[in-house]
Image (cartoon, rainbow, N blue to C red; front, side, top):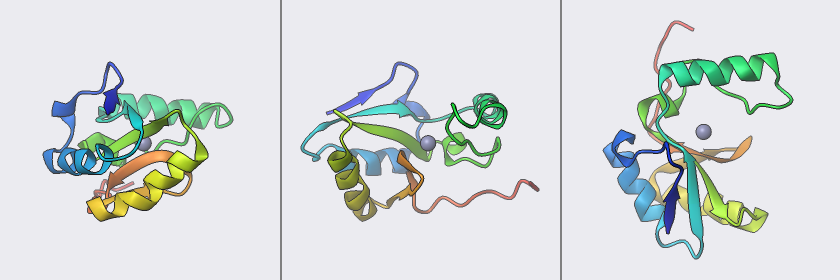
Length: 121
Ligand SMILES: [Zn+2]
C-alpha cells in the first residue's frame, strides 16, 4: 500500500512518472510512505537555503529549478518500517520501472529520463 504525506498530491506528479511509481511500489511486500513529491520553486529555495546554512542538520537540496521534484518527476519514499533491507530491495527493483535512485539519499527516486534543465546555473 502506498501512503502519502498530507501535502503530497497525486495530481502534481508527472502522469507517466506516477504510473511507473504505482507499478513499481504496489507489488512490493511492504507498505511505503511518500514523504515528498512535487515541490514548488519557493519550497526548493527554502530547502536549499536551509542546507547551505546548516548542512549538518539538513538534507542536501538542489538549486531551485534543478531538482526533478520541481517537475513532479521525483519522490522521497520510505519503506514501512524503514529498514536497510527494504531500502535495498527498493533500490534494486526500481530500474525495471524507469525509475532511478541516487546513491547519497536512499529515499530519493526520480524518473530515469529526467534531465536537468539548462537554467544557466
Ligand atoms: Zn528527493
